[in-house]
Image 1 (cartoon, helix red, strand yellow):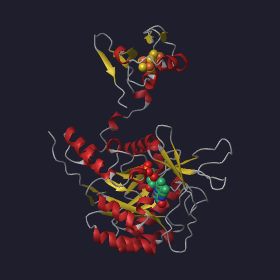
Image 2 (image 1 turned 90 degrees about the horizontal axis):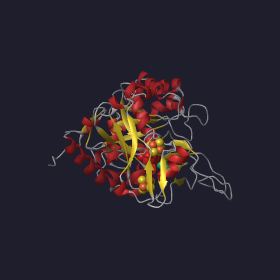
Image 3 (image 1 turned 30 degrees about the vertical axis):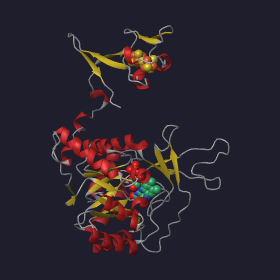
Length: 413
Ligand SMILES: Cc1cc2nc3c(=O)[nH]c(=O)nc-3n(C[C@H](O)[C@H](O)[C@H](O)COP(=O)(O)O)c2cc1C
Ligand code: SF4
Ligand code: SF4
């Protein structure tokens, strides 16, 4: 039976009505849009990254391109956006109004500065305006201000620690999140630097530097601005696996609060992000694509999940999957073999091609019956055939030595 679940929780001392936050991006760049998002039911906002007055933000349009396939046009979104064109004077006003209208919501702001004075001025002014939380963008894929041109601040361990310390010094008891990039050799070292710098938490992560595509007739990159293009920041479902790994790796190695961000598209993704260590989840591409109404599904689906699982609070999910994430050499070595579920098979032959040229030549093709036959001796149980079968007609069975037990490995996606 469904038990009504209260989705509210504590995050760095802030009460969140639910763990779904609008990240620093277009959905929080215009006052009216951020207002509408909060009104629609999102637990909080992080206003798009702002800077000190006079800092020029040379935005170029069109700034968006999509990465997808025939069946789904937007698996990922690439943008060449920069930080907000609105400076701190405007953001101060917005924080004050939003806090007044929505006292029960988390009103956060994101900042980026070039020098110590900028970072600390931004923090001081936001604090005065009544912000609940400050996020620092150390990971704009188009490059951060303050380090070498084009380099992201979070790609330097030293700069990360130094700037985190400047910010926290000025923020005092206001919580500070450092938004990092997975585009580094060792994410754990970056997370340790954030902690050493005294920041309260990490936003893991941001968009990922990418090249969205090339027109094969004109050789123009996407998005193309009169034939020229730039590397863009990839967001959306395409980057979810990278985010999951980033969060897990930080959570397993550094004791610090994490806000998950990058590729979450539904309540199941939220569960996955939280199960590997995030305490809440930020969204950008989902509301940009399908609108703020998506919060209803997130809340409903997540609450039902918690009830079905016998959990009482969103925080009960945090870190649940971490003990199961091991290094390859720590994994068990079951003997698995592919097995056909004949009644499901539609005779497409995809498994045969996959095993012939990318497996272990363990499938024979019966062209009369249009059915695959699996050779138990040759099959090593790599599961490639199972991945390509369009109708889930292949199971991997696991034979336990010295017993008649046969387990089926069920790939759930
Ligand atoms: C058009 C666009 C502009 C963005 N601008 C900012 C920004 O100003 N500051 C920032 O920290 N992140 C920015 N982001 C990154 C998002 O906040 C978020 O980290 C990223 O999109 C990954 O989350 P998602 O997969 O849910 O979209 C931007 C993303 C997009 C798509
Ligand atoms: S599990 Fe691997 S080796 Fe076995 S039949 Fe499938 S693709 Fe071939
Ligand atoms: S891929 Fe699946 S449906 Fe196609 S032949 Fe193999 S088992 Fe049958």
